[in-house]
Length: 417
Image (cartoon, rainbow, N blue to C red; front, side, top):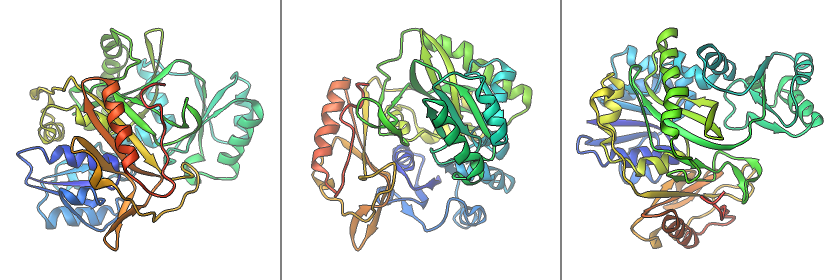
């Protein structure tokens, strides 16, 4: 089978890596891909937002399954376009992708179908938002309604910060169209957990738990990033949460899809806040999380192509999804200055010195004049499996010291906080 992976980050490299293990997969292609994916497949120039270009490629190359990594092409309707032309896709159609494309849409769904979530207020103007602020205590969470590349959620510690953030979004337009509508939310305490599930519209299969580390600095300090590292299993998950999550979140989610006639096939990423063995939904994403995927898929013990094909054909109930008992740690090596401004084009060395049991996923790299150089804020994902969290942490931190590029930065406490 020929598989096309859409995207260029560490998530897409991890997906391609897992698909490459399938005996059913004969060719892996990527648009646009990265130097890591190029080692196991063929990368092709193109934009993830060029839907017609992707359709043309699928038809010209007889692609059997297209796997969509990023949320933007899903929200643009890539799955609709491909399916309507008779091609199999792993990823939800445009209407279902609104779960990530609109915070207000997902909050309304949660309230309508009884999923536990934070109290919120949807606003469409700065004046309305100032009035709505009176309903909340501090800190308060301000969320841009639309897609904002991970920059649309701000935790505001006081009234001045909240008003400035709302002005930037609703008046100044710093997030372009993403901030035309804003959701104000109560601040939830507890700890965050990422729950990813395979969904084929009829069946939902939760994956193993992962813990993401969002803040840039050790001790969970500083601004949010796209994620500075993950571990799986989640060491902070209390016992007995499987049944709680099934009863309170997964079952109502599936019943809600059926009632609202939403055709959802792909991955649903459910961001949770857990406290006192109770969970509330922070957000939905309509694709694999990054870098949670890098940890989770390394623990997958079932053929990923078989799962994805079953999701696309609504036969997931026939697949026995199994997981390894091993621990995985994923450490993000970032560019100096991230998540703010940073320089690109720094030569990366030492990849050939890393031990063979270390898996390095390329997240923000490119090939220039025969050398691999930095090309993003999150550059590499250093991953390892082991029998314990301590073992995996030791492995990834030893490997991180062997890899060099100017301005290399990483957190020292992945898995500990």
